[in-house]
Length: 157
Image (cartoon, rainbow, N blue to C red; front, side, top):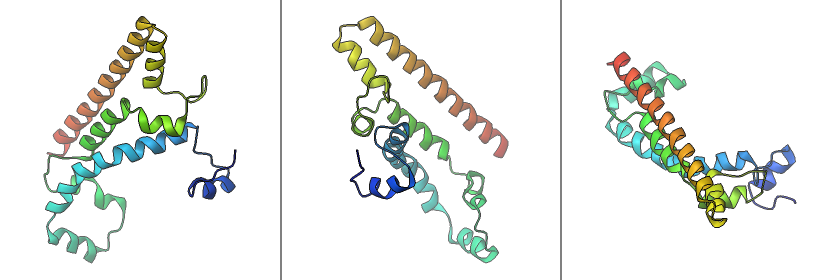
């Protein structure tokens, strides 16, 4: 099936297929989660004093190190927080992902869709197992993010 969207038609000659692939899921979740990251970083960037910008411009520093959290002046909102919020939103995302991933059995499936399929088949035990596994994975990843935040705070003051 040829790509007929404005992005798909540009990527298809390069051999990149987005729709109905894991890449499509990543793209969809990025667009869903990016606002959460932006909202946590935005106040930090607004609080930066003009002197920081002028110092960076005069030193002509244009590397990614300029955007590293340790260069942001003591603000509690770090990119980790935005990632945690985006992850929490993305774990249960159903609507936007199902449009781009489709419902292809033994292909590209997402756990919320599998849970709904189990519930429609009256397999409550199977749906519960999937939900608990998803919950445990979420807790483990959020714990890892919190440990990373704690380590970053203790290391950088």
